[in-house]
Amino acid sequence: MAVTTPPAAIARPAVHRKWIPAWPRGRKPRRRAELGLLLFAGLITIAFYVLAELGAKNKIPPHLGPILGVLFALLFAAHLANRWLVPNASAVILPLVALLNGIGYVIIVRWTPPAAKAQATWTALGILLYVLALLVVRRSRDLDRYRYLLLLFTGFLLIAPLLPGLGLRINGARLFVHFGAITFQPIEVAKLLLVVFFASYFAEKKELLSIPTARLGNRLVVDPRPLIPILVAWGIAMGIIGLENDVGFAMLIFTMFVALLWVTTGRLVYLVLAIVLFVGGAVLAAHVFHQVNQRLNTWLHAAPNSQLGYGKFAIAHGGIAGSGLGLDPAAGQIPFITTDMVFAAIADEMGFIGAAAVVTAFVLLIGAGLRVAQAARSDFSRLVAAGLTATIGFQAFFIMAGVIQILPFTGITLPFVAYGGSSLVANYILVALLMRISEEGVTSAAERAMGFRVPGDSGFVVAA
Image (cartoon, rainbow, N blue to C red):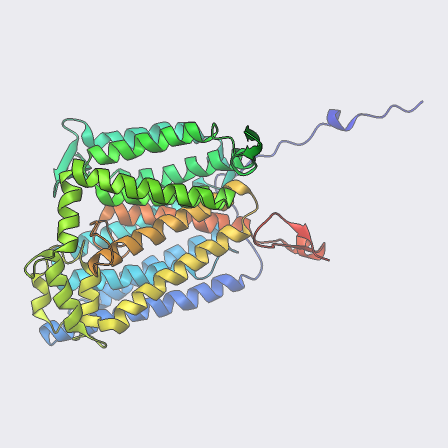
């Protein structure tokens, strides 16, 4: 009698993941489109750079050749990394980032030339870490395995600015740490790790947070107990940020948390509860924290000679078409013009058209990120993509709305545009994670032949 081996007993060949992946063969239409868009973004940056130098000094920049070479070398290096590691990922995310980064660099060269070299160095480091992140994170689900380890490291990053001898107080906030000559903001990395942790927890507890299972009288309600651990983690993070006296990042982490909770459950009650908590927390913070009260007073009663006052005059002076790159020396009076107030500098010399172009670029970037989230293959990947997109979208919205006084001024950086190494490097890592999830969401030729498609709001299904 023939003996059959059970399927579980069949030895399977070991699968070894190569540290250096092979170069993928075949056509890469998305990468060709990306290369064209990157060249276009690079040409726009160079054109703005030349116009700014002509306007300010009435001459062609003396080192235009080396600048051109460095710019296109960085863009081409990132493009080659995409061809190698994420050949099927989104074709528009990296060009939009390059355009925003280029516009920001032109503004920095215009107003704080000594900082331009540092910003170029941070950009190169950001692209290097972008490539390393794609190499290390081969599968987004690998991040899910180290949820609590990442949370522990996040806690250290949040506490680091409060440690004696390590943290620095700059402009009233303790957000910086220093190691020798290196100074950076650990919270920029912590915000990415918090997205991963929240996404992992919400993906695991999705049903418990969405489906009513607890009885309250004659009605079934959502059991609040699964929310307790995540609320404790969120509360500790918010408390530490409050001790560091930074309003902007506290608001950013709060909105990111609420956005992920709503994307996970789709329940309106969480949004209503979040609004109530936000209003109550804002009123309490205005009475407890001096910085919050000061920012509210500045928002409601901005003096003409204040930071926001100068910014309003600059935006009004720019009008529709702008005063011209390099042609308005008065804008240099704006305090922190290349960090907190970089959007006002853009609106001054590039006008409403230039400011609208920056806003449009962010809208397109957010749309591309949400499209990546829709096409993700797992709840965890979908929530990570949505959380990362919400983080960069809300961060851009808060600072731009603060400059034009729609919201209280927070002082956080405009992603990819404002001067700041910590923000720039962390945001390039953020983009790498989005590109990895985008690559995973693309159907293979075999899956398309079988009739699989990506519906956008659920897992893979067979097309009718």
